[in-house]
Length: 405
Image (tube, rainbow, N blue to C red; front, side):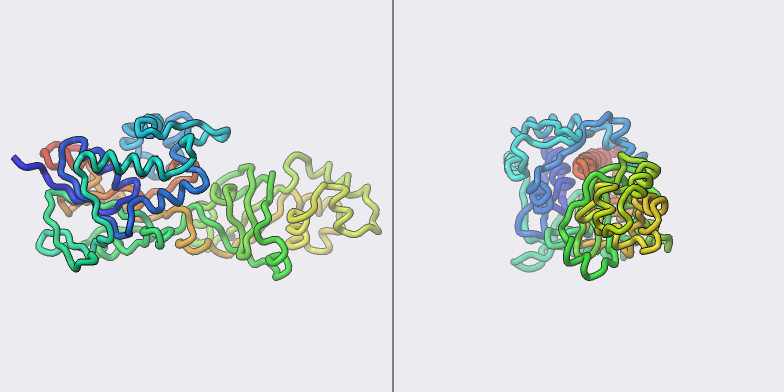
């Protein structure tokens, strides 16, 4: 009996993880990737140090996926952070835990891991076809646009791992959405996740402070309160502290609520202490000198106070102290999805069964970021892509064998 033929569409982490499991389980696997090479976004993520996963306890790890955690639990229980580390170690990319709890390969790069991963796949007979863009089906065959024309490919099952819509130049462009919605699949709108936000800076502030880091501040939004740092951009703000609040800020703005990012610029001193120090300053001194001597604020932090605190508030020590402890940055909108680190929205969980197969579309499975989930940065994104890729592969095998999820 010949091997079952599996077509995987998408050569990112989810697709490669699915191919690895299926080829290791005896299936005949072809990967079709629209870009000239596989793993392009994976490689970009590794430029500043490939954050594979996070070392925090598994129960807390799963909570990072919010409302989607129950649907992702099975996949993460089978291939969570411990399994990701073991997998990377077996590919020769030994890992370590950073001071933040994030897990990285010791080489800090993605390219050695991707090379070893591809070599493993090819040693198992996986065929990788690049510049093959999926355009749908014809008479039950998967159709691809290729440099040699249109190809229709037979398959026993097909697994889609096409990513979201962030960084379209690397292949995740969301062009798959109409191909699914035309077949009745519910796809929730793709939205930017882990993204920056626009702020209407004055021209002086934008020109003077674009690129400046704002360090050691506490931020509050409808997502809660956290400490960290972010970066001023020409258009607004971005960086790790912003990304941690991005989902809530984005949803507030889309719902017509104020997208306020509230900063405590001096988190280690109370408002009373700041007010007392401000009262002791020379009232004839410039505002910049009063602010620096009483609060230690200068540079970009002092400029933020000048940008958003009215003159009458600046003259009153108590009111100024309160403003420094709760400076409101009025956000206008999220930055475009093309700039986001990841994507929210995607294939609705209500259209996916326990095998990660599309309901009403037998033999078509989905994995990775094209599913409707989101997570913060810190290794959670990549881990869920790997986990859902493997889970969809396992579900595909169960379906082919006639087993239940």
